[in-house]
Length: 452
Image (cartoon, rainbow, N blue to C red; front, side, top):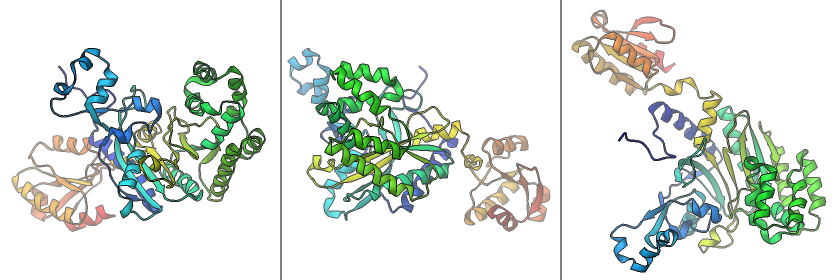
Protein backbone atom coordinates (compact mmCIF):
# COMPACT_ATOMS: atom_id res chain seq x y z
CA UNK A 1 0.00 0.00 0.00
CA UNK A 2 1.28 3.43 -0.92
CA UNK A 3 2.04 5.50 2.21
CA UNK A 4 -0.14 8.61 2.66
CA UNK A 5 -0.81 11.29 5.24
CA UNK A 6 -4.08 11.25 7.22
CA UNK A 7 -6.92 13.22 5.62
CA UNK A 8 -6.74 16.89 6.40
CA UNK A 9 -2.98 16.87 7.06
CA UNK A 10 -0.05 17.67 4.77
CA UNK A 11 3.68 17.37 4.26
CA UNK A 12 5.56 20.60 3.56
CA UNK A 13 8.39 20.78 1.03
CA UNK A 14 11.44 23.07 1.49
CA UNK A 15 9.82 25.66 -0.77
CA UNK A 16 6.56 25.51 1.20
CA UNK A 17 8.42 25.78 4.49
CA UNK A 18 10.30 28.86 3.26
CA UNK A 19 6.95 30.46 2.44
CA UNK A 20 5.35 29.39 5.72
CA UNK A 21 8.27 30.82 7.68
CA UNK A 22 7.85 34.08 5.77
CA UNK A 23 4.26 34.17 7.04
CA UNK A 24 5.24 33.32 10.62
CA UNK A 25 8.14 35.82 10.63
CA UNK A 26 5.95 38.63 9.26
CA UNK A 27 3.26 37.98 11.88
CA UNK A 28 5.86 37.61 14.63
CA UNK A 29 7.34 41.00 13.68
CA UNK A 30 3.91 42.64 14.06
CA UNK A 31 3.33 40.93 17.41
CA UNK A 32 6.67 42.18 18.75
CA UNK A 33 6.03 45.69 17.42
CA UNK A 34 2.93 45.89 19.63
CA UNK A 35 4.62 44.52 22.76
CA UNK A 36 3.45 40.89 22.74
CA UNK A 37 5.66 38.12 24.18
CA UNK A 38 5.74 34.48 23.12
CA UNK A 39 4.67 31.43 25.13
CA UNK A 40 3.93 27.80 24.19
CA UNK A 41 1.49 25.26 25.62
CA UNK A 42 1.37 21.44 25.16
CA UNK A 43 -0.24 19.84 22.10
CA UNK A 44 -2.41 17.83 24.53
CA UNK A 45 -4.68 19.26 27.20
CA UNK A 46 -6.86 17.49 29.74
CA UNK A 47 -10.36 17.04 28.31
CA UNK A 48 -11.69 18.77 31.42
CA UNK A 49 -9.86 21.86 30.15
CA UNK A 50 -11.24 21.63 26.61
CA UNK A 51 -14.80 20.29 26.87
CA UNK A 52 -17.64 22.77 27.09
CA UNK A 53 -15.61 25.75 25.90
CA UNK A 54 -16.49 25.68 22.19
CA UNK A 55 -20.20 24.95 22.22
CA UNK A 56 -21.85 21.66 21.34
CA UNK A 57 -20.60 21.71 17.74
CA UNK A 58 -17.04 22.51 18.82
CA UNK A 59 -16.97 19.68 21.35
CA UNK A 60 -17.77 17.22 18.55
CA UNK A 61 -14.65 18.35 16.67
CA UNK A 62 -12.20 17.60 19.48
CA UNK A 63 -9.62 14.90 18.76
CA UNK A 64 -9.55 12.72 21.88
CA UNK A 65 -6.45 10.74 22.89
CA UNK A 66 -6.90 7.15 24.05
CA UNK A 67 -5.56 6.43 27.53
CA UNK A 68 -2.37 4.40 27.59
CA UNK A 69 -2.29 0.88 29.02
CA UNK A 70 -4.90 -1.87 28.89
CA UNK A 71 -7.90 0.43 29.17
CA UNK A 72 -10.35 -2.21 27.85
CA UNK A 73 -9.61 -4.51 30.81
CA UNK A 74 -10.92 -1.84 33.18
CA UNK A 75 -14.28 -1.46 31.45
CA UNK A 76 -17.36 -3.32 32.72
CA UNK A 77 -18.67 -5.91 30.24
CA UNK A 78 -22.04 -4.18 30.07
CA UNK A 79 -20.37 -0.95 28.83
CA UNK A 80 -18.57 -2.81 26.03
CA UNK A 81 -21.71 -4.67 25.04
CA UNK A 82 -23.79 -1.47 25.00
CA UNK A 83 -21.62 -0.19 22.10
CA UNK A 84 -22.24 3.44 23.07
CA UNK A 85 -19.23 5.04 21.41
CA UNK A 86 -19.73 8.49 22.96
CA UNK A 87 -19.94 7.10 26.48
CA UNK A 88 -17.03 4.71 25.89
CA UNK A 89 -14.86 7.52 24.53
CA UNK A 90 -15.49 9.60 27.65
CA UNK A 91 -14.48 6.63 29.79
CA UNK A 92 -11.22 5.77 28.01
CA UNK A 93 -9.98 9.25 27.00
CA UNK A 94 -8.72 11.80 29.53
CA UNK A 95 -6.77 14.01 27.13
CA UNK A 96 -7.35 15.69 23.78
CA UNK A 97 -5.44 17.62 21.14
CA UNK A 98 -5.92 21.35 21.51
CA UNK A 99 -8.73 22.79 19.38
CA UNK A 100 -7.39 26.34 19.51
CA UNK A 101 -4.81 28.38 21.41
CA UNK A 102 -7.18 30.61 23.40
CA UNK A 103 -8.55 28.07 25.88
CA UNK A 104 -5.06 26.67 26.65
CA UNK A 105 -3.95 30.29 27.13
CA UNK A 106 -6.75 30.86 29.65
CA UNK A 107 -5.65 27.71 31.47
CA UNK A 108 -2.03 29.00 31.39
CA UNK A 109 -3.06 32.35 32.90
CA UNK A 110 -4.90 30.68 35.78
CA UNK A 111 -2.14 28.15 36.42
CA UNK A 112 0.65 30.75 36.33
CA UNK A 113 -1.23 33.76 37.73
CA UNK A 114 1.33 34.30 40.53
CA UNK A 115 4.07 34.78 37.90
CA UNK A 116 2.11 37.10 35.59
CA UNK A 117 1.96 40.90 35.62
CA UNK A 118 -1.34 42.22 34.25
CA UNK A 119 -2.20 43.31 31.66
CA UNK A 120 -0.46 40.31 30.12
CA UNK A 121 0.17 40.41 26.35
CA UNK A 122 1.14 37.08 24.84
CA UNK A 123 1.35 35.45 21.44
CA UNK A 124 1.58 31.82 20.32
CA UNK A 125 2.38 30.27 16.95
CA UNK A 126 1.54 26.56 17.21
CA UNK A 127 -0.51 23.84 15.48
CA UNK A 128 -4.09 22.98 16.49
CA UNK A 129 -6.32 20.05 15.52
CA UNK A 130 -10.00 19.76 14.63
CA UNK A 131 -11.92 16.64 13.56
CA UNK A 132 -13.60 18.62 10.79
CA UNK A 133 -14.49 17.56 7.25
CA UNK A 134 -11.45 18.48 5.11
CA UNK A 135 -12.12 20.84 2.20
CA UNK A 136 -10.45 23.71 0.37
CA UNK A 137 -8.95 26.03 2.97
CA UNK A 138 -10.00 23.78 5.87
CA UNK A 139 -7.62 21.27 7.42
CA UNK A 140 -7.62 18.95 10.40
CA UNK A 141 -4.14 20.03 11.44
CA UNK A 142 -3.23 23.66 10.97
CA UNK A 143 -1.29 26.47 12.59
CA UNK A 144 -2.77 29.41 14.44
CA UNK A 145 -0.94 32.60 15.27
CA UNK A 146 -2.67 34.12 18.31
CA UNK A 147 -2.28 37.40 20.15
CA UNK A 148 -4.23 37.95 23.38
CA UNK A 149 -4.30 40.46 26.21
CA UNK A 150 -5.78 39.66 29.61
CA UNK A 151 -6.26 41.93 32.59
CA UNK A 152 -7.70 45.07 30.97
CA UNK A 153 -11.22 46.21 30.00
CA UNK A 154 -9.98 49.03 27.77
CA UNK A 155 -11.61 49.17 24.33
CA UNK A 156 -8.36 50.67 23.07
CA UNK A 157 -7.14 47.08 23.01
CA UNK A 158 -9.82 46.14 20.48
CA UNK A 159 -8.74 49.06 18.30
CA UNK A 160 -5.09 48.05 18.66
CA UNK A 161 -5.85 44.50 17.54
CA UNK A 162 -7.57 45.88 14.44
CA UNK A 163 -4.43 47.94 13.77
CA UNK A 164 -2.33 44.77 14.07
CA UNK A 165 -4.50 42.94 11.57
CA UNK A 166 -4.19 45.87 9.17
CA UNK A 167 -0.41 46.04 9.65
CA UNK A 168 0.10 42.33 8.99
CA UNK A 169 -2.04 42.11 5.86
CA UNK A 170 -0.53 45.33 4.53
CA UNK A 171 2.91 43.75 4.96
CA UNK A 172 1.71 40.71 3.00
CA UNK A 173 0.28 42.95 0.28
CA UNK A 174 -3.20 41.44 0.74
CA UNK A 175 -6.26 43.69 0.48
CA UNK A 176 -8.79 42.69 3.15
CA UNK A 177 -11.97 43.82 4.83
CA UNK A 178 -11.89 43.72 8.62
CA UNK A 179 -15.37 42.93 9.93
CA UNK A 180 -16.46 43.83 13.43
CA UNK A 181 -19.54 43.10 15.52
CA UNK A 182 -20.38 42.67 19.19
CA UNK A 183 -22.01 39.78 21.02
CA UNK A 184 -23.97 42.27 23.14
CA UNK A 185 -25.50 43.64 19.94
CA UNK A 186 -26.46 40.11 18.92
CA UNK A 187 -27.92 39.47 22.37
CA UNK A 188 -29.90 42.70 22.05
CA UNK A 189 -31.22 41.63 18.65
CA UNK A 190 -32.31 38.26 20.07
CA UNK A 191 -34.02 40.08 22.95
CA UNK A 192 -35.74 42.52 20.58
CA UNK A 193 -37.17 39.78 18.34
CA UNK A 194 -38.51 37.96 21.39
CA UNK A 195 -35.98 35.12 21.51
CA UNK A 196 -33.53 36.24 24.20
CA UNK A 197 -33.19 32.72 25.58
CA UNK A 198 -32.15 31.39 22.13
CA UNK A 199 -29.12 33.61 21.55
CA UNK A 200 -26.80 30.59 21.12
CA UNK A 201 -29.01 29.01 18.43
CA UNK A 202 -29.41 32.35 16.65
CA UNK A 203 -25.68 33.17 16.57
CA UNK A 204 -24.68 29.68 15.40
CA UNK A 205 -27.20 29.93 12.56
CA UNK A 206 -26.45 33.45 11.31
CA UNK A 207 -22.71 32.75 11.49
CA UNK A 208 -23.37 30.39 8.54
CA UNK A 209 -25.01 33.07 6.37
CA UNK A 210 -22.11 33.17 3.88
CA UNK A 211 -22.23 29.38 3.47
CA UNK A 212 -25.95 28.55 3.37
CA UNK A 213 -27.60 31.88 2.52
CA UNK A 214 -30.51 33.63 4.20
CA UNK A 215 -33.05 30.90 3.34
CA UNK A 216 -30.73 28.29 4.84
CA UNK A 217 -30.32 30.35 8.00
CA UNK A 218 -34.11 30.74 8.28
CA UNK A 219 -34.62 26.99 7.87
CA UNK A 220 -32.03 26.21 10.52
CA UNK A 221 -33.62 28.67 12.95
CA UNK A 222 -37.07 27.18 12.36
CA UNK A 223 -35.70 23.64 12.78
CA UNK A 224 -34.29 24.69 16.15
CA UNK A 225 -37.70 25.87 17.24
CA UNK A 226 -37.25 29.63 16.87
CA UNK A 227 -40.77 31.06 16.30
CA UNK A 228 -41.51 32.04 12.71
CA UNK A 229 -42.39 35.58 13.86
CA UNK A 230 -38.96 35.99 15.48
CA UNK A 231 -37.23 34.66 12.35
CA UNK A 232 -39.12 37.17 10.20
CA UNK A 233 -38.26 40.07 12.54
CA UNK A 234 -34.62 39.00 12.50
CA UNK A 235 -34.31 39.14 8.69
CA UNK A 236 -34.08 42.94 8.11
CA UNK A 237 -31.67 43.38 11.03
CA UNK A 238 -29.05 40.87 9.89
CA UNK A 239 -29.35 42.11 6.28
CA UNK A 240 -28.85 45.76 7.33
CA UNK A 241 -26.78 47.76 4.83
CA UNK A 242 -25.16 51.21 4.68
CA UNK A 243 -22.09 52.90 6.16
CA UNK A 244 -20.91 52.05 9.66
CA UNK A 245 -22.41 55.29 10.98
CA UNK A 246 -25.75 54.59 9.27
CA UNK A 247 -25.88 51.07 10.70
CA UNK A 248 -25.11 52.34 14.20
CA UNK A 249 -27.85 54.98 13.94
CA UNK A 250 -30.42 52.37 12.85
CA UNK A 251 -29.30 49.94 15.58
CA UNK A 252 -29.85 52.59 18.25
CA UNK A 253 -33.46 52.80 17.13
CA UNK A 254 -33.99 49.05 16.70
CA UNK A 255 -32.38 48.21 20.05
CA UNK A 256 -33.85 51.12 22.01
CA UNK A 257 -35.55 48.68 24.39
CA UNK A 258 -32.45 46.57 25.07
CA UNK A 259 -29.92 47.85 27.59
CA UNK A 260 -27.50 45.08 26.63
CA UNK A 261 -27.86 45.77 22.92
CA UNK A 262 -27.26 49.52 23.34
CA UNK A 263 -24.14 48.84 25.42
CA UNK A 264 -22.86 46.72 22.56
CA UNK A 265 -23.58 49.54 20.09
CA UNK A 266 -21.65 51.97 22.33
CA UNK A 267 -18.67 49.60 22.38
CA UNK A 268 -18.68 49.15 18.60
CA UNK A 269 -18.91 52.91 18.07
CA UNK A 270 -15.98 53.58 20.42
CA UNK A 271 -13.76 50.98 18.73
CA UNK A 272 -14.62 52.35 15.28
CA UNK A 273 -13.83 55.88 16.50
CA UNK A 274 -10.35 54.86 17.68
CA UNK A 275 -9.75 52.83 14.51
CA UNK A 276 -10.81 55.75 12.33
CA UNK A 277 -8.02 57.86 13.84
CA UNK A 278 -5.27 55.31 13.14
CA UNK A 279 -5.02 55.66 9.35
CA UNK A 280 -5.64 52.04 8.38
CA UNK A 281 -4.94 50.87 4.84
CA UNK A 282 -7.82 48.38 4.83
CA UNK A 283 -11.58 48.86 5.27
CA UNK A 284 -13.29 48.15 8.61
CA UNK A 285 -16.97 47.18 8.35
CA UNK A 286 -19.68 46.67 10.96
CA UNK A 287 -21.26 43.37 9.92
CA UNK A 288 -24.29 42.21 11.91
CA UNK A 289 -24.14 38.74 10.32
CA UNK A 290 -20.78 38.17 11.98
CA UNK A 291 -21.56 35.94 14.94
CA UNK A 292 -18.63 33.52 15.46
CA UNK A 293 -20.19 30.46 17.05
CA UNK A 294 -17.75 30.02 19.92
CA UNK A 295 -19.54 30.39 23.24
CA UNK A 296 -16.87 32.33 25.09
CA UNK A 297 -17.05 35.66 23.21
CA UNK A 298 -18.86 38.29 25.27
CA UNK A 299 -18.03 41.62 23.57
CA UNK A 300 -16.36 42.66 20.33
CA UNK A 301 -15.89 40.02 17.64
CA UNK A 302 -13.67 40.31 14.56
CA UNK A 303 -13.18 38.52 11.27
CA UNK A 304 -10.96 39.26 8.28
CA UNK A 305 -11.83 38.34 4.69
CA UNK A 306 -9.37 38.59 1.80
CA UNK A 307 -10.60 40.47 -1.25
CA UNK A 308 -10.28 38.87 -4.67
CA UNK A 309 -10.07 35.29 -3.37
CA UNK A 310 -12.87 32.82 -2.65
CA UNK A 311 -11.85 31.52 0.76
CA UNK A 312 -13.14 31.70 4.33
CA UNK A 313 -11.98 34.08 7.02
CA UNK A 314 -8.20 34.40 7.40
CA UNK A 315 -8.23 36.00 10.85
CA UNK A 316 -10.73 36.34 13.66
CA UNK A 317 -11.22 36.79 17.38
CA UNK A 318 -12.95 38.85 20.02
CA UNK A 319 -13.38 39.66 23.72
CA UNK A 320 -14.03 36.85 26.17
CA UNK A 321 -14.52 38.37 29.62
CA UNK A 322 -15.65 35.16 31.31
CA UNK A 323 -13.13 32.62 30.00
CA UNK A 324 -10.65 32.50 32.90
CA UNK A 325 -13.57 32.37 35.35
CA UNK A 326 -14.29 28.87 34.05
CA UNK A 327 -10.89 27.86 35.47
CA UNK A 328 -11.35 29.54 38.83
CA UNK A 329 -10.05 33.05 38.15
CA UNK A 330 -13.07 35.37 37.83
CA UNK A 331 -12.95 39.04 36.90
CA UNK A 332 -10.10 38.85 34.36
CA UNK A 333 -11.09 40.33 31.02
CA UNK A 334 -9.43 39.15 27.84
CA UNK A 335 -9.41 40.04 24.16
CA UNK A 336 -7.50 38.45 21.31
CA UNK A 337 -7.44 37.21 17.75
CA UNK A 338 -5.85 34.56 15.58
CA UNK A 339 -4.23 34.61 12.15
CA UNK A 340 -5.08 31.54 10.07
CA UNK A 341 -1.60 30.84 8.70
CA UNK A 342 -2.69 28.07 6.34
CA UNK A 343 -5.42 30.15 4.76
CA UNK A 344 -3.06 33.11 4.48
CA UNK A 345 -0.69 30.77 2.62
CA UNK A 346 -3.48 29.84 0.20
CA UNK A 347 -4.37 33.50 -0.36
CA UNK A 348 -0.73 34.51 -0.98
CA UNK A 349 -0.42 31.61 -3.44
CA UNK A 350 -3.64 32.49 -5.27
CA UNK A 351 -2.62 36.15 -5.55
CA UNK A 352 1.04 35.34 -6.35
CA UNK A 353 2.20 37.54 -3.47
CA UNK A 354 5.13 35.51 -2.13
CA UNK A 355 8.52 37.22 -2.63
CA UNK A 356 10.49 35.35 -5.32
CA UNK A 357 13.70 35.10 -3.28
CA UNK A 358 12.04 33.06 -0.52
CA UNK A 359 12.56 29.75 -2.30
CA UNK A 360 16.35 30.03 -2.55
CA UNK A 361 18.12 27.48 -0.34
CA UNK A 362 21.37 29.48 -0.31
CA UNK A 363 22.78 32.63 -1.83
CA UNK A 364 25.60 30.70 -3.50
CA UNK A 365 26.69 27.15 -4.22
CA UNK A 366 30.32 26.37 -5.05
CA UNK A 367 30.88 23.86 -7.87
CA UNK A 368 34.13 21.93 -8.39
CA UNK A 369 35.48 19.68 -11.16
CA UNK A 370 37.87 17.55 -9.07
CA UNK A 371 39.15 16.88 -5.57
CA UNK A 372 41.53 19.86 -5.69
CA UNK A 373 38.57 22.06 -6.45
CA UNK A 374 36.56 20.50 -3.63
CA UNK A 375 39.37 21.19 -1.19
CA UNK A 376 39.50 24.84 -2.28
CA UNK A 377 35.71 24.98 -2.17
CA UNK A 378 35.62 23.74 1.42
CA UNK A 379 37.77 26.68 2.51
CA UNK A 380 35.79 29.14 0.39
CA UNK A 381 32.36 28.06 1.66
CA UNK A 382 33.52 28.24 5.29
CA UNK A 383 34.80 31.79 4.76
CA UNK A 384 31.54 32.87 3.13
CA UNK A 385 29.44 31.31 5.91
CA UNK A 386 31.52 33.04 8.60
CA UNK A 387 30.62 36.32 6.87
CA UNK A 388 26.97 35.55 7.62
CA UNK A 389 25.98 34.51 4.09
CA UNK A 390 24.01 31.31 3.40
CA UNK A 391 26.27 29.15 1.24
CA UNK A 392 26.86 25.53 0.29
CA UNK A 393 29.30 23.33 -1.62
CA UNK A 394 28.22 20.65 -4.12
CA UNK A 395 29.99 17.71 -2.51
CA UNK A 396 30.46 15.46 -5.56
CA UNK A 397 32.66 15.98 -8.62
CA UNK A 398 29.73 15.44 -10.97
CA UNK A 399 29.39 16.79 -14.48
CA UNK A 400 28.92 20.54 -14.54
CA UNK A 401 25.50 20.18 -16.20
CA UNK A 402 24.26 18.15 -13.22
CA UNK A 403 25.71 20.63 -10.73
CA UNK A 404 24.12 23.58 -12.56
CA UNK A 405 20.78 21.73 -12.59
CA UNK A 406 21.05 21.44 -8.78
CA UNK A 407 21.52 25.21 -8.48
CA UNK A 408 18.53 25.87 -10.74
CA UNK A 409 16.27 23.37 -8.95
CA UNK A 410 16.98 25.08 -5.63
CA UNK A 411 16.67 28.63 -7.01
CA UNK A 412 20.19 29.53 -5.89
CA UNK A 413 20.98 32.93 -7.42
CA UNK A 414 24.77 32.55 -7.68
CA UNK A 415 27.20 29.72 -8.38
CA UNK A 416 30.93 29.79 -7.72
CA UNK A 417 32.81 27.70 -10.32
CA UNK A 418 36.19 26.27 -9.32
CA UNK A 419 38.22 24.94 -12.26
CA UNK A 420 41.92 24.76 -13.19
CA UNK A 421 42.14 28.45 -14.17
CA UNK A 422 40.45 29.49 -10.95
CA UNK A 423 42.75 27.31 -8.83
CA UNK A 424 45.80 28.74 -10.55
CA UNK A 425 44.59 32.29 -9.75
CA UNK A 426 43.35 31.44 -6.26
CA UNK A 427 39.94 32.79 -7.25
CA UNK A 428 36.40 31.65 -8.14
CA UNK A 429 34.27 32.41 -11.19
CA UNK A 430 31.06 33.93 -9.83
CA UNK A 431 28.06 33.43 -12.11
CA UNK A 432 24.80 35.34 -11.70
CA UNK A 433 22.17 32.72 -12.56
CA UNK A 434 19.60 35.34 -13.47
CA UNK A 435 21.65 37.49 -15.85
CA UNK A 436 24.26 34.92 -16.86
CA UNK A 437 27.06 37.40 -16.06
CA UNK A 438 30.37 35.79 -15.03
CA UNK A 439 33.52 37.24 -13.47
CA UNK A 440 36.54 35.80 -11.67
CA UNK A 441 36.78 37.13 -8.12
CA UNK A 442 38.55 36.45 -4.85
CA UNK A 443 36.49 34.96 -2.04
CA UNK A 444 36.53 38.31 -0.21
CA UNK A 445 35.24 40.05 -3.35
CA UNK A 446 32.47 37.45 -3.64
CA UNK A 447 31.46 38.17 -0.04
CA UNK A 448 31.28 41.88 -0.87
CA UNK A 449 29.05 41.20 -3.92
CA UNK A 450 26.70 38.86 -2.04
CA UNK A 451 26.48 41.14 1.01
CA UNK A 452 25.24 43.96 -1.21
